[in-house]
Image (cartoon, rainbow, N blue to C red; front, side, top):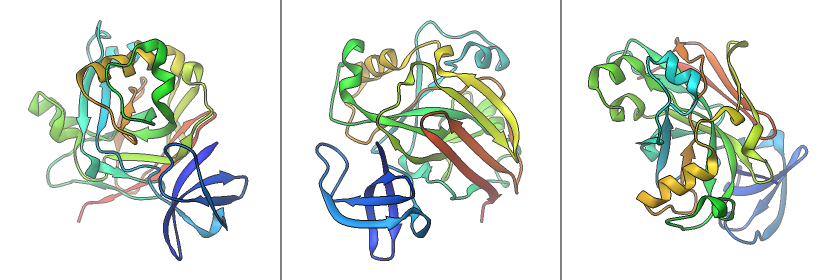
Length: 254
């Protein structure tokens, strides 16, 4: 099932995407879904970020080849950092390049996990019980600021630096999905989630030992090798097979 958050002429709703239509649901998508009876052609609505999380927890250097391209080895334990909820945008929204502050902004295509219920200290064997589904993500990063600061909060925390979408796929098996990133149609990243150094159950266990996870919270699982710079005017697409494609264009920040 594909759960989307969308805007139509009568306001914002969650809904279930079925072929070329979207069936609206009442309230939030956590728990049993209640359909309102409204149905819209998918072409007539605007897809938004599928969720507005209370927090976005990201995992650094979780593909060995990416760790090496960044000048190191994959860490023995997951490296976690956060992105503010204000960085989240949806499919089709613009990534704003902060030219006054950064001269190097990179794409980082990722598979994202969406948490379905409040939880803490979740054993890896029960991780699937607390996951609502999966979506595509782009962990946009001001690479020069990341190197300059020595930590990652500013580099990864700009408004618009966390595109998510196009929807939440609840039926995907994340163990071995193809993930790719293209810039202006050219493939820049091409990998599989089976190459993750720390798999998704491990990540859910690790993060939930540190903090309580709430419904709608997002875990970014890490980016594969091939990250690189974006320029104003570029169109970047992250695709995860079985989940969907997320496309955003880069514009100058006002």
